[in-house]
Image 1 (spheres, rainbow, N blue to C red):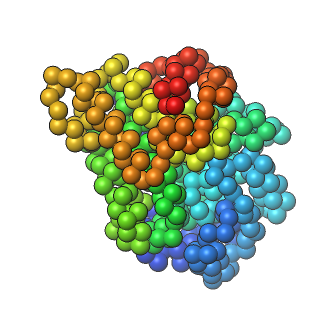
Image 2: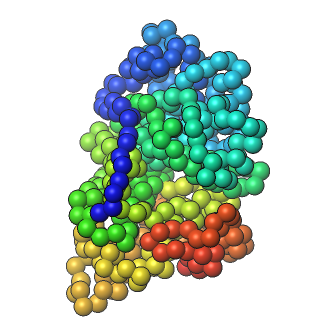
Image 3: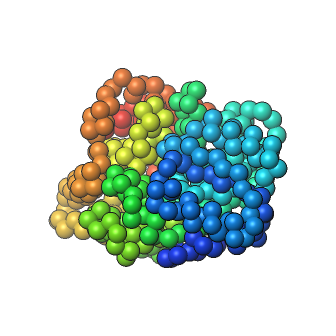
Length: 391
């Protein structure tokens, strides 16, 4: 186990009826807030009214910025920065899922950043660290990204169709209000994509070459089994609190950095998927259900014992260990069956995507990088081969 530091200050407020606390939580930081959200779903399911009622009760003034879309856009971030500076806002409240939260985080640090080239200075230059950000709070309505208590944010520049992630402790939200009842009205596909995203965050951390991480292995394996068990049940019983709560809490723990302390996570599949959703605007979870099995097939022989452990402990494969390749292939097949059972694609062709941008995506994945990933260091040619495996 490697040396590590763990820091996560997010106050988690979990359970039924907790949205009425959002006003009092915001008041701890500011009485002037940017209320940031996506489309009309929070107005249809009543979350918007609950949030506004709580803000009004605490005397919180707020300015609204709606219109965040999946794979959140740089243009919306820049619009938010302009509003924050013009209206003298000192707190960002994100109401929605990962796209809204990531957009809020980008506004939070972009509002205080020097210079006029946010994309070039930070997203394309991760060595330029974020030094300060406005505080962010979250009302989570879609379990998926784990952004409600993570250091990460991902933004798409629609000018170049590039999607990039950056990390900083400065953007970890101050609080996250999580009521699983808000998930009842989620479309099936959104629930499925969220489950795939949660599972991917766990697998990125699980596939490591570091030894002697027994506790974190067990935690990751238990969390992965939890997703495999409860995602189908949440689709079958969308208004059942116990299934929604299991997914929501697992999504948070999957990406708050607790499970990857003392080990080196991979993140190649996410890097490749960012090129896929940047180029085609595919849902992130759907992109991951395509890329991850292909990545597994490409790299597993480099550390086959790690994949055998995954096959047995997570996918319940029960084959003779004399044929490790068969054990691993069976696990990957089962993972693909799980994705398909949720209605997700497992091939590029399932999503109507062909070969026309494979070379471009492979090249873009390596901008300002020599390799991606840690389990196996991947080159541009490796990325190209993985994308072709995914056809």
